[in-house]
Image 1 (cartoon, helix red, strand yellow):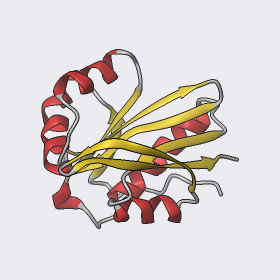
Image 2 (cartoon, rainbow, N blue to C red):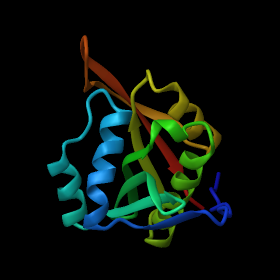
Image 3 (cartoon, rainbow, N blue to C red):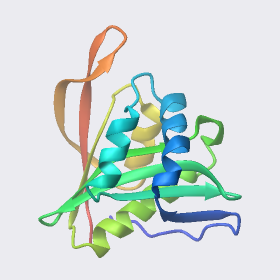
Length: 157
C-alpha cells in the first residue's frame, strides 16, 4: 500500500526542525511518554542529520518526527503529537509526510517500533498499510520493568 500526503489546512504547516524548536519538542516528548527521550538524544538526532520535521498549528509546534534513511530503507525513529491534539488526524498527516520523505530519498521499505500498549498508534500504522514483521523482547522501559516492541514495516511503491 502506498501512502499519499494529504492536503493540510491553511493553519497547519510542516517544516524541517530547527535547533530553536527543541525546547517545545522536548516538552511534547515529556507530555506524551512515560519514558521520554532526553534533550541530548533529540539534539543528537538533529545534529547527525536525521530527517527531522515539525508539525505546526497556527505557528505553534504540536508534533514532530525523526526519520533515518539509508541503503533503500527508512526507519521512523520517533513520531509524536502533543497529547492535547490527539485524535484530530495530525499524526496521520505527519506520518504521511515522513513516508513521502522516505520515498523521495530512495527508500522502498519503512520500519518502525511501537509498544504493544500503544493501541492508538498501532491502529494508525495498520490503516496506513504497515504490517507487523517482528518483535523485540524487553525493548522499552516500563514502570513494571520492560515492554516488548512490535516491529512494523511498510513497502513503498
